[in-house]
Image (cartoon, rainbow, N blue to C red; front, side, top):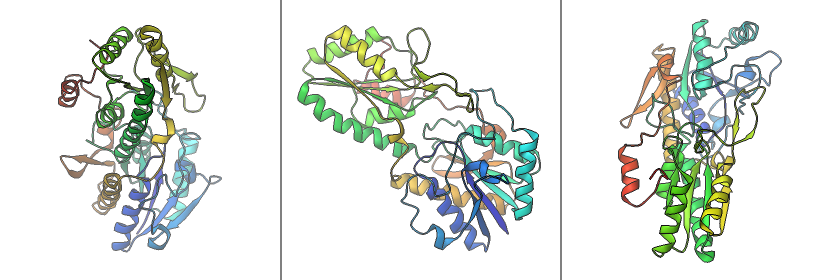
Length: 361
């Protein structure tokens, strides 16, 4: 049997672990694996092409960040427009992809991506291509799975940054504002903030007021703090409900590029408190580097499960992690269902109990 695999959308630590799991499990079954380069673009006749993946080709990739296959969030295939608004792949592009799959004798396709990529996977399934999905988003915001690989590595990057910033902030008695990823969901900011000892965490799900933030900063200095650490997710809303953006709508991705909320918060805090403030935007540092042990293990388990779904002919399904068990759910049920931080959740209450402010009171 010959199967295919591709990565689509943004990269993150753990993608190579998935490839490692797929190749290992497929080899045990005597199957051949073809990897398509640069996401869905590798399915097109004039695209970047494909490579044969075997144990010799994938030895040692478990510890590597990024993906040896490459990926893209641009090009000819559908991109997610909004939370619910999705564009379909044009018929002629889909026909070219199906022709490539047929020509190469691919009997099933593993698609590793977020809900935009998995929506494309669902369209392929509906047009007769046997496909299974593996969820990939460092934002950890897919409702159908309790955790996605790459999230733990992103949190580790945030925690390391906060550890480093805390020492320099203490030395100069400064406020440090760290902007992290999180368009709709604030999981990276929340977990990174707790793990890194942040004083204030600002999330998309909890409406903050800058006056409350400034008041908390003054309170912390008045009670003996030499510095204050603030973590803010890029998707945290301003007081008027708007988002900070660095660029307008991207013509290909049709999605606004967020950024600048950290700079805004830092500037306002300095104006309102008089405390010297610096802001840092971690950006793609959160996507890079080697995956943590947890992400290596989770990615490997996801890859093995994807192969098992093909073996069981459970197409149109997505790998899912719930209660320490790797199972599967329907792709159709999984896409467009965001898992957001609940303001009254146990983890938020735990953060409040150790003195973390969310700027809402």
